[in-house]
Image (cartoon, rainbow, N blue to C red; front, side, top):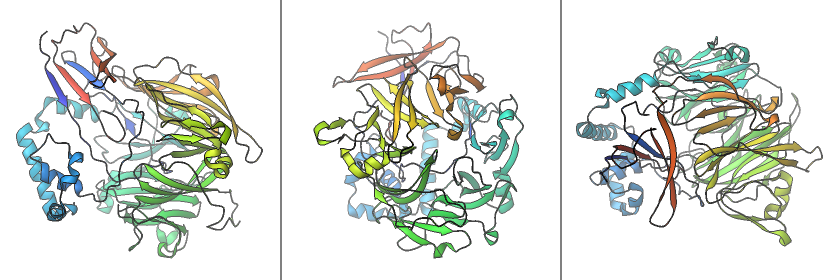
Length: 587
């Protein structure tokens, strides 16, 4: 058999600081193009891709104590490129760590000069990508006006952050649903980030928005806009008025947070839960907020009461609010590592202006679940995604739930009984099938599954019981059928409006398309297409097929081959091999 010419692209990633937990901030949807700018033209060789496998056990990641470690490690081992960096941390002696501590100053002239030297070595060895025809082709695709404008809904408007070659930092804009359904909607600019940067002499980069959730159908014109200088982790947060389309100055009662690695959440129209740099003791050793303050409008931030604090060795501590339907909960979360957290919650009533709420330390209960679990609520139900095995149920009926399961039980039952509570199993993993995510509507939960790394959806219907503490009833709504070689993203644009979901589908040979599905008719109802992108390459003669390779320990590793339909599978075709591993995406 003729030898196969293979280009192997190896990617080694290091974990960055972050809690890996849910965020209540409403990050404005951006614009997406075809995900395949590297897809082959007619004369290109075979492509093989191995996407995420279904892990049976989720690995836990240790805390990152110092952000400069990546630079120091690269400095020590930059002449040993074949050695995995993460495996070598133990080889750095205390003396060597001290010698390289200057790399902790990641913005210093010395550290930046070191980076420039390494970049120059790379350019000398590999050439300047700007001189590549492929680079220009990719840039043309990325700068194309052919994008799907993904949106988030607030009141009667759909909001979108649009970027292109004219507006590289973004236009935050809005339109109505009626306009959005047109092929060329009319958009109203809310904030021009490029113009703002020029006006204020700053290199502003959009970092998202946060809005207050005051209950079903209750809207407010105020939101928080976060901007970073040059795309750094630290952000400046300023309150913005959607009616006047202008920032609200602090002297007029607007909230303003100076540059820091902050967490911020509205607890009501006039109060924020804030974690930010307030000096000694306010940050963890990872550099993220350790304290949560309740900051009321019209008062100084430094006078805000500290209502919750984590430990200095935690990754972070945050406070936030979740709501589904008429149920609202306030949460306190200590991220003890990247993938472990300790939670407490309490019901949060909807208050009328001037009405007093519960005391800041009243009504709290620790959530007795494994610290690796990911939590959310649906009505009065607690949803628990496991990262490790967990046995639950009464003594006479204990049930083992495997890592990767998604469970549901009434919040009050879990708080009262802990692992003795009985759960509804919404998903249980198998050796070949895993849960990659889920989305909630007013009365449904849609699960996105990877079945032998092919995609399919599963539906659960939920009916809230009106009796306090009774939880809800779950009904299996079936699946979307056989798993397919495609990527599906599903979300509810407005959970309060019913059970419609928006879906983006794409594949190796089909560009993304945006559709709407009414789940009241099940998952297999007709998709109403709203937007689709043109092909960026000729795909009519291409096909994607799945194969499996058996590893030395007997594990079957699935992979995909994207190639011309008439390609001879005799080993004679030059092949590009791509794989990825990191952030719990298996190689």
